[in-house]
Image (cartoon, rainbow, N blue to C red):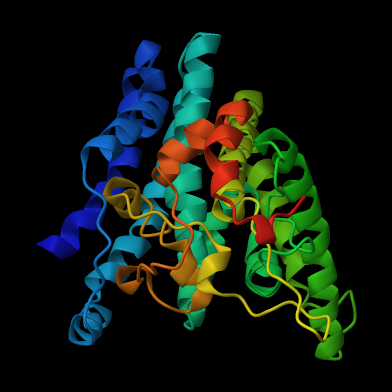
Length: 347
């Protein structure tokens, strides 16, 4: 039964469905649940730092339930997106209700869309990577697959990484720098991959072209079937999903820096180069994303067997709570700056 604890990750789309169905003030139920109730629960529930034994790891890797809990997010995310678009475009609603619906579905895109896509994007199976890319489509962030897997994991905790926040950089500044630099870098990485495979820029193997085409096709389809409101819904929810992802990126490596060796190259990625959180509620809802240190240490490791490393820098709160704190930069700096190892500061 303990394996089914990750069903709690579906609580966010369930709450979002209630928000969309009831509308009115209820349309804001999802952000209240995600950023008020969950942080409150994180303060109540204990921090769990235990790791699984080698025998338990082997058993958990054999259980396909952990994989199916990820796969189920695909119909849930798409179903909720199109239900939201349909409701917004066919039901007379007030502007404040529409904004609440945007936020609710946007949170689902960030948590059950991009976050799950991130996990599946690291898998060895082509089919699982395909599902991951499909989950990125409604967020209009398909280039994330290329930049994250071929860029971020290579350059994390260095100034070369767009997704690593500098010391004393606010989350609002980071949103702009990270989004822009990641997109540009994704094209550069794609160009290198094509060159390494002796393919031209206009080759059918240029995945970035396909991503652009698929995302434009998605938006055109929504516009043709659901009009301006549906189109606005698709754009607004994607933006919220993206900002949610980038807020997570912000707290994951904030202020951390890999040192350079005598050869001038950066040291390899270690457990100390990502912020870790063992707050159990955030761990479950985010499919163990909060054990980010171990993920970077061994990126192919599945979420259900990620470890806690004592040497990793520990966040005082869970990821959901930390995201709320990051929205108030002076508060965030006051709490986090003193925790950043001085020799690692990116300034």
